[in-house]
Amino acid sequence: FPIASLQFELTSHCNVFCKHCYNNSGIHNDVPDLMTAEKWVAFAKYLVNQGGIFECILSGGEPLLLGERIFEIMDILHDDGTCFMLLTNGYLLTEKVVRNLKKYHYHWLQISIDSVREEYHDSFRMRRESWKKAVEGAKKVSENGIPLKIAHCVTPYNLQDIDEMCAFAYSLGAGCITVGELCLSGRTALNQEMLLSPVQRKFLYQKVQENYNKYQGKMRVKCSNGIR
Image 1 (cartoon, rainbow, N blue to C red):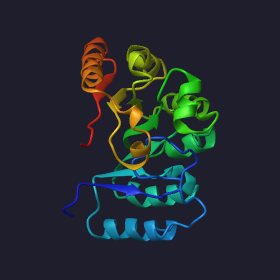
Image 2: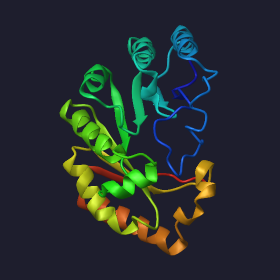
Image 3: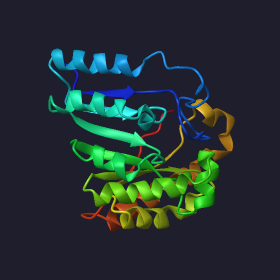
């Protein structure tokens, strides 16, 4: 099959309402997705029948909102040798869910944590206890031997916290943290005060390089790619 990697945006539904969401997830939670779980299952089977894919990136919305159906989709690809990147806000990472996820092969299981401060993260993600759930989920993931990546969005309001955030990610057992600014799409267009200035962007790159050097050999620190 000529495709090595595919990203499945499994749902437009989300259980948080992030101020920067690039695809406006969560605005139609009361409307069923046109691409149903049954259709994703059929598509996964089709890919396997066509020769399979090396990597599948699972995102949304919040992919774990599919409940047990997400494991059905992953099982089809897993049995064919596919490895995964799962992108989640971490809110639904209960002990049971993490145990079910443990069987699969991953590049990373990525959890979004936007601050070492609970109040900032919850405000940014627009849901109370979202920081607490993400942190608890991250601990469960690393404790179960699943490769953990932290995705950290930088705005002018948490720009000075990059060193502290990298240390926090390392303490959670992360093998990688991606640190990056927002792209001007989706709900960021309504919250443009969260975009970095050229001077702030330069500071971001400087801090990423410093922490890359500091954690070299222990945790990957890199800058996520933005979209102009």
